[in-house]
Length: 226
Length: 264
Image 1 (cartoon, each protein chain N blue to C red):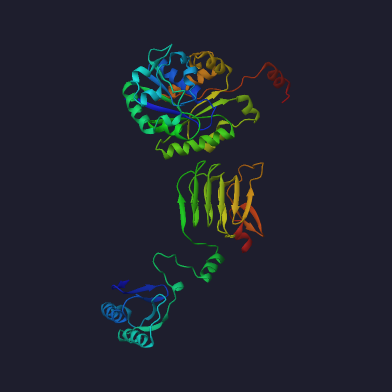
Image 2 (cartoon, rainbow over the protein chains, first blue to last red):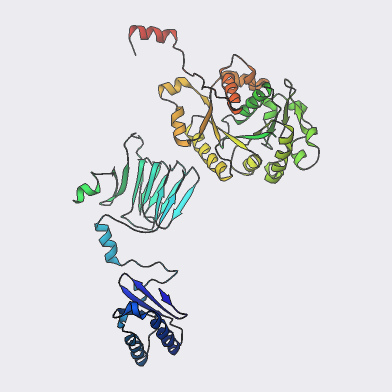
């Protein structure tokens, strides 16, 4: 990424993006842009550039000016970006809907994740916006609340709430799944009074408005979808 | 330089005071210079269990607030020259002492004694925070009940948060015949949840009730099963490797007959 005080040029997966400071004077912007491109022009010849200046709208002649400056450096203007489409520092990028669905179809979910590298004992509460992975046990009296999925590489005996903000596709899985209470989105269940032991890894998720628990592995999701 | 060991549990009535008295007496019997500190201000018991109630003049609060010197408040045990008790105050409450003051006291005790055993009150509030403030090691007492295990788990978490790593576990009042019938949690059930090192298992024993009422710790009673368990725990605290006690219930004559005839 190359930048001056008010102008920045950044390569993304979808091509070059030019960031213009919305509050800076337009003449100053053009001067800086000219300088910036002079330094880096060899790499970029012939590329398409999309521009972003927040919600600021430039006048017709300013727009023409911008396109001209870009042309002088053999760059092609190819449109404006909206706030939703670009990454703004300090703000989490909104994933586009089709990317999330595409990943879901491949059996993948992404998002921020909290690794808890210890056992959670009674009285401990972990709350996180995203997924939670516990490398240890979750004892009775401890709780985990996550907006995403919960994975416990050990015994889950406490309370777990996945998809806490209403995400019904969230899941809770554990090597030994025996929670005091299990919640996914708006559904709540408690463990059956008689505990079956030695069942191996299991995963809980919502199917047809019901919270169900099944063996985690070959005969669960993959077996049914394909 | 001595060592401060806090005996704690979270839940009340699981045997902290009995354990403190027996470990302290056991260590003293082995020749160490030991002090027992009761931090259960307002509900003191350790003096009664040790049979020293009528000798109390000054107490813990007098020492921490500077009313008397440490030496004046220490009560010498009836049986051992090298065993002392620092009793709790009965007329004050837990807020009469601060963790800071306990740390200062702990430094003082360490210079004087080989071991200081701190009897912690039930609960996780100020009394608990005072008791663990100056400790180097912790012993968690737990009975084979779900509620006691739950509280012990919480306590272990709080001890770890207070940088008291690797607390040791004593399972108290276990009844082998009930475990055998499947009516009581067994040792592995408890260790499964608590996941800390076991330092001893003490069987339920009537002699504890008798010795507590008499003010004579069971650890001195050679015939007592619980006493034997405490003797082993004492040796483990000193760093010896000792096997766990065999808690198998001997078959009664009736059971032997049934086995012979082949009825289960």
